[in-house]
Image 1 (cartoon, rainbow, N blue to C red):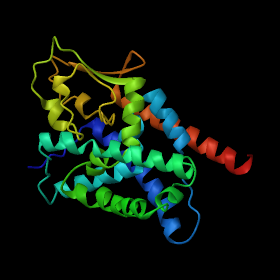
Image 2 (cartoon, rainbow, N blue to C red; image 1 turned 90 degrees about the vertical axis):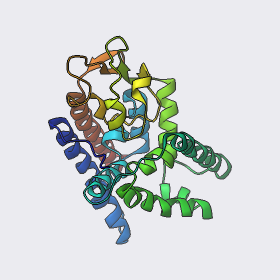
Image 3 (tube, helix red, strand yellow; image 1 turned 60 degrees about the vertical axis):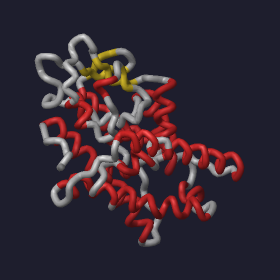
Image 4 (tube, rainbow, N blue to C red; image 1 turned 180 degrees about the horizontal axis):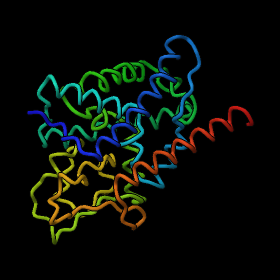
Length: 265
């Protein structure tokens, strides 16, 4: 069964933004690095962490280069292969792997004094396990999603585990479900790339949500019910306007701060 969500005006605009962030990483960072040159990385962990605290997991669903690459590989895979879905019971066990990885990497930061906000490659070269992890990461991001969408995000991204905890403690951005109007059609569950059972919850916050906003698209929740809504700091927002605006602001702030640190600090 092919599980890629049907394109709508919303998904087309979002996919353009996803492509920009994914291509910027591979053309400005990865390719120069492989050629022996210093790359220009737009992504800064300081800015990413701040955005998670202020905006919720927006970065994961719109700007993460690995998540975006995984998404487009799933789109490609859906044209060729059946898209597999890990059975829910197994999925609910495997999704805790990323929390175990978070604990492990946190121990490295504490024991070896590795600066997570500095050069990531120093962290990934610290021992044999981290080397295996970074090598397998490419497979998990670029090959496995041909068959299993968002495999890396669901099970192996320790940053996503940390972002979940941050968003759970400080639910700045949430998906709200109005139980009085919901007819439990489960369309929202079927389009969620992270296999969240949205129809069983009143609020989604810190529960693996990527803020992809698939569930909020016009072809999902029945128009005469509209039981799902996006709230940012308690205020209702429209997913397309919000996503596009934040993408532009995030990119502008990132480029400004990178320029400032490169030439003036």
